Amino acid sequence: MISQKEVLNFLKHNPALTITALEKEASIPKGTIAQALTGTRNLAEKHLIALYPILTKYGYSDSLYEKARVISIINHKGGVGKTTTTSSLGEALARRGFRVLLVDLDPQGNLSQILGVDSPESQVAHALLNHHTPLPIVEISDNLSLSPSDIELADAEIQLILSVGGDLRLKNKLQPLLTQFDYVLIDCPPSLNKLTISAMNASNSCLITLLPEMSAVKGLNSLLQRVMEVKTNLNADLKVDGIVFTMVKKNSVHDGIKENVKENVPIRVFKTEIKHLVDFQKSQIVQKSIAKFSDNSEAAKNYRDFCNEFIDYLQIVK
Image (cartoon, rainbow, N blue to C red):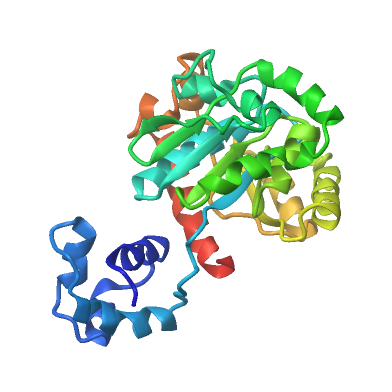
């Protein structure tokens, strides 16, 4: 029988489902599920029994959300919003009630810094180089945790190149954590190096952040080719979730490049665009995530909107 936790988790992942319609289909008193969602009541056994076939009809299965979805945020170019996207999407998912782990896989350590973790004593590099050391987990806020890094990771990468199973180290370290989280987001370095390949090998999918300028778009084919190489040789289940445009300006150049990408690149382009807004630069100067810097800003709303679109997309691919 389905549990209340599983019911609520399924509903969080499927916000398009109408609660009142579910209650009507399952012949449950109006307001019962809504109260369970707010934590003010528990669903009775008879309610759970009635809901099981209804939710199954809408895509529920007993193994659907047993393990976290692991997503690498990638681009070989720097300054295209990978770290901001990782932190902002992670915070937005956590606010929706999902358990989120952010993994800082960039030796620059910017993700760790904006989340308030400087010079971490325990970090990702230590876990990758020591078989007996688990990935460190630092609780940032409700439902949001971080595996931090700093420049030590650059030295670790050199050792991973020479190590047996270097490409598998991150995947193996994440395995025991997958039942503890709903999403794992990996902030990758601005290159197609061993760390990025390790991240893709450990992931279910990749999300590409793309600045709509020629310098960023020119390398897109090389990036997609590297993803296919990982899929062919290391991780057959790897998918590309799509492209999210970042730092978008309202001008004819950006508009033209976006249209060109949509017409010629055979992968999903998300409708929500992250605009070029000064609050993003200000938040970086003070080393804060955009939500902590200015939660009511248009910049923060951009990522909440993208989070909603991304969750809706995931219901298609499961």
